[in-house]
Length: 359
Image 1 (cartoon, rainbow, N blue to C red):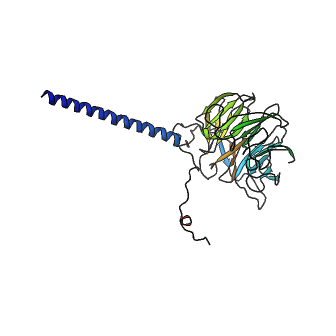
Image 2 (image 1 turned 135 degrees about the vertical axis):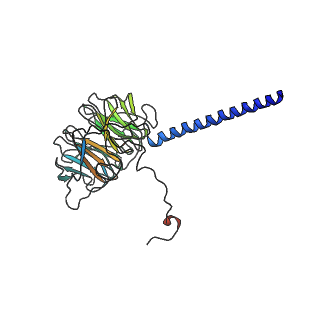
Image 3 (image 1 turned 30 degrees about the vertical axis):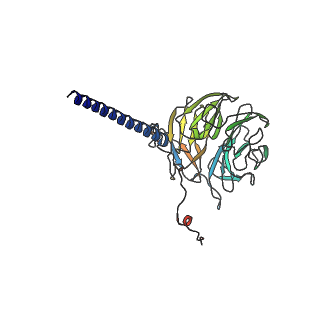
């Protein structure tokens, strides 16, 4: 009987231990499942206030026969004129405040437009990730400065590999995010003399996984949209790491307004967010899609003195304009759950399974 009780005790012990193991396995699976879900669907996002804006469809009026292609960059000059940078002819064009076409600029200069900025003297700065150059154009469209060499991709103090954006300090220093082929920021003086570069590929402080946008605040701090690491890294003027903002989405384009709030167009979750000086999301507008007010790879943005937002919308082949309105007092309906317009698989249709030529 003692033996039976002992065996039964051992059995109960083994059964209890097996149950513990099963529970542990289930717990681990649940945890890993939740972790995987957060990685793929951004479960950490919470509802935020809806920004007070309304989209104005068909704001820009092109001449007959002119069409918009992939919309890449947008910027405003001191007159409030709007410059559109796109991957179709004409690649760079100017419109007045009412959206009326004025002229095209720089014919034949660009290969694959990416970023567009305008400095305090109304010079236009373009980044071309197809030809690997950054150009400074006068307001009349004359080339004033060339950084990099056309169609030469490399990493050095005078060459880029698919640069993405450019920003300027008060003293005229130039910052270039050298993002697709390299993973760094390059600093030049106002004349284009190389000063320094910082950054390498990675996930740590001062490292980048596609530095896609760059902006400078009034204190001279440099904000870098580290796109595929889903963060904004902030440095001093000499490239010393200060801090990072995470939990914000994919920073495709950055714009700093006079109140030093950072506006970010998120081309992964396809919305625009306003961030305060501590990186907190104050509000959002937009959602993924193709209707007016929706985005498919929102790329860069600019904000006028009157608060109007101009956004380049790559996959929708359009530039969208949002007029400020009174806040609705509501929370934004769209809360990001997963990255849109991104996943892809190899095609397995009829034409890939046969050698019969297409007619």
